[in-house]
Length: 242
Length: 307
Image (cartoon, helix red, strand yellow):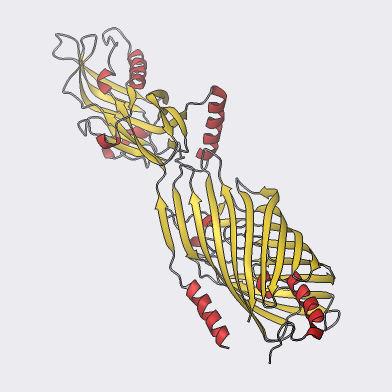
């Protein structure tokens, strides 16, 4: 009988043990967008002066690209595509769309999210611009139109010596994709925190455009190209922050 | 007064024969191959399948190791390494009925694809079972036994959540946190020095916290034992498991359900008339589990002591 009591007591003690959980972080890649500060006037390489009232961009996805060969990369894409089918974010991509108002923030970084990739060698990121979802971060009354646009620009453009200028309204609805290479491959072998800064230089969006000669459609196409090429990636040190 | 093993020389041979039969029935099951509930009959080592002996009390300590994974490599893979210590006690009020109570303490190491780790210590689900012999060919040293098994797993474990407050997949919970009825039957045959048993156990989990419902699970055990010496026996067998789908927050977990077959090899030793030690290795031979779920090698070792 005494043995039975001891046994039952031991079992009950085991059942009443508190749970204990210890978590260790793994490989983490923090991603932030770093737009340039917006000047009062942007002077283009062709001498035009552009004053912006609105400059919005919607970015839909950021994905790490492995330094694998082409076939392996394709396989990786297929795997990632499957993963996206049931999750917005994957270990190598951020899927939550974000609307950036480039007129605000004065060039301060905007945190996009943290990826948790597997060990490996990564050579760059793929950025996708697309109209925002209705619940996208950064979407508000002022930016509501970005559910239909990838980029939206409003302002005034003046030729050299022209004080009146012409209104500028460029809504871009097309999706665009941009692959950016790191200055050096990122090699992840163990737990580490890496920062990635995606720089947006919208002061270059109007370069190479002769507003006096080009049609509105041609201007929009050229700006779309400039938006793509204005995205750059940098690898700041962890202590630099964003 | 309760009988002791080997009370005199004349009885030694007979007791060793009984002990041999007992060893056959103290067969350890392979380690748990399911993340939320043990595979087969985890109380088998302590209750055994031999004919119950009235007023017998046994205690046991069993260590189980297993590992499995879900998800795609390089994409979203989670791997699990589990060590489980089960403390148990069993009592036979008559020569036809045995009651057992088993409490697991579980350690789980969950590794995410980015090498982040979560180490979890938690109590598992308390397991109560009753086995009743419903048919035997004779009362003394029966060669054929048919038993029915009933039981209940108590919700003594806790649900683990991720950093966003979402319950972790069922595979990574220490238990189901639900009231889970158990039902089954077994048949045992003794042909000295060989013996064989077949059992079929079903577990029917009810809904746990966070709308979590573990898989309904059907487990079959087929095991043969050869005992060339009274103190040592060798075992070979197979464990079949068929799982239904599991649910988290009312949504089906795609990595639950399916079928797996384990091949098992084991050894049982009787170093003392009151002590039995056992070890079993289990290797998955056929895996047809749903989703991207893979299970790995499992190992069980333990000790049973008769009070």
